[in-house]
Image (cartoon, rainbow, N blue to C red; front, side, top):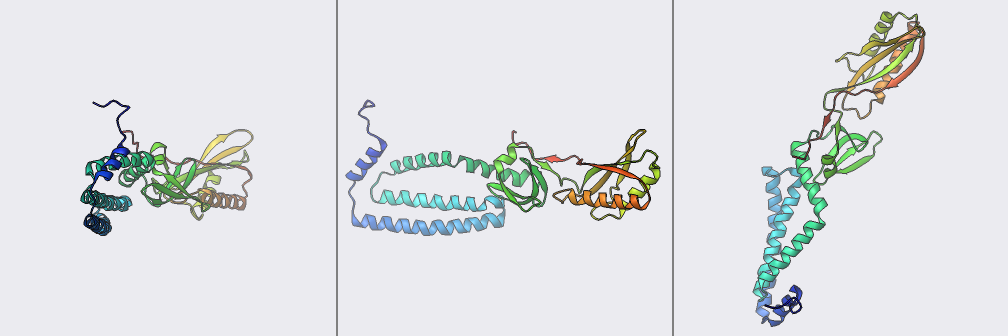
Amino acid sequence: MQDSGSTTSVADQVIDELNSAQFELSDFIVAAGVLIIGAVLGRRAGRYAGRWFRDSRAVPEVISNDAAAGVRWLIYLIAIGTAANVIGVNVAWFGLAAIVVLVVAVLILRPQVQNLAAGIVLTTRSAFTLGDVIEVDHKIGSVVDIGSHSTAIETIDGTRFHIPNNTLLRQTVVVYSAHETRRSTFDLVLAPHTDRDRATSVITNALAQAPVIVNDPAPDVVASEVDANAVRLTVCVWYPSGMISDEPAIDAAIRATYTALEGAGLELHVFDVSIVDPPTSKAPDNDG
């Protein structure tokens, strides 16, 4: 047995193998033909495989292109190994080199592989889909694309964020459009002598006619605080959950309420707006 000092490296052994091989022109011609045929077959097989994956839905659509590329490169590798064998190169060394290259590629592409796997999970088990309004990493927007490596959301100001799928599985994702409607509230303060029943009637009638506000569930007005100085009413309104922001709904509700109270001669002191959302959903936990 040779000791470690006299053991030649893999690269040296491959070079020795090439130097000792008897190359003939005919072998190179045949090897070139194998490579050309492999290249043509690889491209055609990849194209047909991609079409089959998309038509049969054997895999999620987001990874059909990656699966087709895998088929294409597999045929390329087979052709290269066959060509090496034709010219007399020991295919065992080629196989070892291919394994080393594969391991290095896996280590380098690990983040992409993780995102690809996460993309499959999001496509098959996701709590949200295209068009849903979600919040992740303090960003709220509408889902415009779920890709193989990242998911794109667009905020109310038109900014588009591409969030890695692996991040979506590791963080809490709030789904605001899990239900058809969302709720927001605002408080208003009236004079202490205000007729609360009349004020409630005026407000609910005004909100029933306000744009954007949904009447099912109906707006609700409750007295949240009454003292010698003022009467505080909390107004709850509902609006379509597909809206990225509640600002249009709150704006429409406050304008309608202010106009109606002023028209009814009810004294208004101050608005105090706050936001309350309904129960929301969370993306699936990938821990098991």
